[in-house]
Length: 137
Length: 131
Image 1: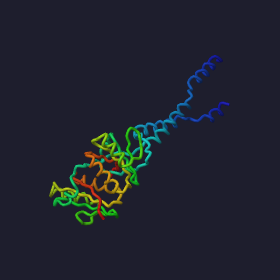
Image 2: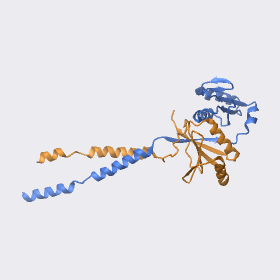
Image 3: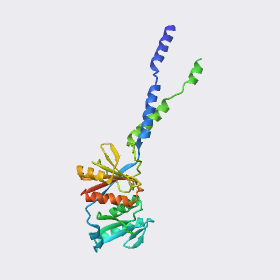
Image 4: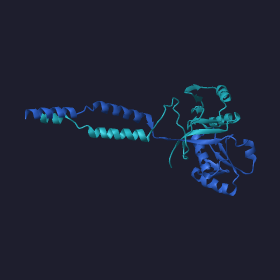
């Protein structure tokens, strides 16, 4: 009986593994990944710089002018419009005249975010013929 | 004696399981990002395009300061300096990392300069926001 007990004790000691170092390393890895990783999806917007001279475009008949003023209001051909409706309006214009050019005039102090939003709305409407300039006023 | 020993021991296996699951989640779902020394919050976009690895990145801060990021050298540059770099390297495409709150005046100025340097393609870095 005694010998049996001895073996049992030895077996128990062999089976138990110290997992504390493993937990330490896993914790360190977890902290590293939690701090270093980001869930933001990166994207890009391509801007074509060969869309012609501004003065030439502005004077052409087939140019749609979008104005983005200091307050962030959007005017499509001098008519005040909500930014969420601009896609449909441009789509309708493009359907009638596919070669129309879009000229976006933004106020100097307006944030880039708003200009980019406008560019994307125009792109989603189906045209890539965009020229950007600042409002003179 | 034996009952005392049992009370002292805490079962760590469920804790390790959860930590392992969290670790796997962060490893697979996230992407490791570089720390931005300029702390630029890029604009949000509703169109998803694949990010490029450009030859040259121009960084424009809120106050209009311009930096060029190339081979991990980040230095504030005057207009003349970065024009010299552009002329010397003649990149076909440039990535523009601009803060979302930068006045459009600076944005259009830099586009004009790039256009004059005959750079055909400018890619603006954005964060994709699902709508």
